[in-house]
Length: 584
Image (cartoon, rainbow, N blue to C red; front, side, top):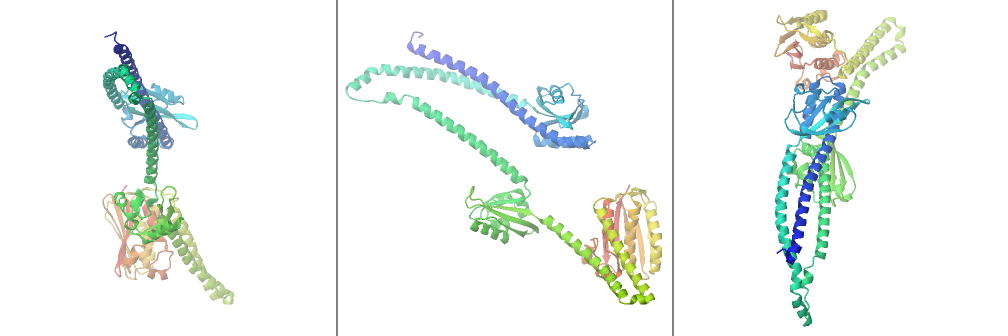
């Protein structure tokens, strides 16, 4: 057997193939393991930098480790890694998998030592806390050139070891099959190599007869080998292009998902091909129900459909503002043709301008109200001034009367400006509250005594009713007294002589409820929703004076105390203003 030509040719091939397969198997296992670990290390390094950047403001500004711990746990769930924040002295500040108080000092950890010198540290070892083999990667957290902490991320290598084990089994099985196939192929190739020699006489005989056979030519593999190589190169190139396409698609999906603007892509037939989450919210429709439907069915807005048609016909960008029902959203719609990437397609982007429009309306209303409120006293002052200039100065009693009226108007203007400044400070949070523990009865008694003279002058009865032993509240007594004065003052203005005003207080579910009840003219239902707006006055209040800012100021003062204010009223029977303060 050993002396046969078949053995001499086949045996070296079999031995060579077995050696190559074994060597490649060992190399491939090592290469794959190193590649996995390198890939995991790069990902963990990126995650560590992200965590470091996210945690730095908390480390600087926050003294509460719970905030850092909660932030780390949430970030760990998003990144799917274990996160540990280590102080520069090695103590654990926060950890997403363990209680940091139960963890030992990490100053002697290899990766931590590296990061404390300003480098990226990494290590593979058995975790004492989780009893798993882990890959650790850490980076320094630097503030003003100083390393204040170490951001470390880690993952378990258990899944990697399982993959490597499965890979080893696969390679051993593949190697065994390859060895068997190698023997078969070697014998086959050898026989095929010797076959032309055995057929030589037959071929020569055929050539002598003038019969040409290309059978031997078809058994040559040179060209086939080149084609195979070209095909493999083509496959590899297509694979890279597909991977690049997947990456671009995932990036685009991420952008569309997190965009606040609504995005639709519509083809030339008006069929929706793409719909992002913001568009789902605006049109109140699920993405799966929108894709494949017409723009008319999805948008249910003729202005948007017309805008799409104009863009489709002109092949130019178009924009307009429109209102989307039933959510009453005011949006700006922009349509852009997509000829270069999607012939006949149109990109529709809708920017929600509802908040901006509301702010603009508030600004416009404010300017209008201020102008209106200033116009009346200014016109009165001007008229009085002109009257004085036209000869009233020659009549001292009349002049004094006109000057007195001018002083009243100036006082009204001064009061309005002061209340506007006060309201502006309250709304912007620039009003300091001097909170203290106070008994509600003390505030009520003080305010009732203060307003008693005004009530008697108007022919009204002002009393207070509250149970003994009311719990204390934490509040600024001056600001709460200001609220009471505003409410009682309004009650006096709108209650006819002989009426009664009662100030109540009682405890209810962790809060103290205050109520100012009158027997006045009441408030119309349409005005109840707007009574706390700036400058808002019910019609009957136009002749009673005032700036229309008192209730708005009261509302903001109660809200910054953590309370709530509201009103209940019935025409010709009276009104009751309520507000609450939390129990101290």
